[in-house]
Length: 178
Ligand SMILES: [Zn+2]
Image (cartoon, rainbow, N blue to C red; front, top):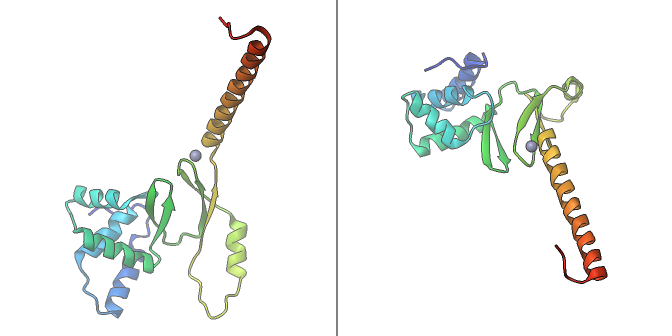
């Protein structure tokens, strides 16, 4: 199994390990393989992509094991789930004290750092609650999609103007155009 990319492999494995121990669950190699595979992605992944990656690593698991383990990882806050325009996506989120901006048109996700927010949350006292992390999603439209929308709008306006001109011509000269 490849080493996880974001250098928190040992920490996340330890979280899973102690959870399984405390709850008397079996420490199956499948669960750790799924955790490692989830943390081998640099960004969001679908359940299918996760399954494919496990196959690539010669560690195929059943659909049920995959779903159950991902649900467990979500409960442990090691993985988050997002509903994007093209379906549900997952992401490794350990020490995910950051914010992401998500384009609601193409689904592109960019991570951004807003230290002010981290500071505010850090200073915020929560009643009867020990905070462990946070994540913020900012929804909007990326610059590529904004440009695409502008082009579409311009095209629509040009067509509208052409129609107006055509109608003016018809009302003035009748329907004999060209
Ligand atoms: Zn976009």
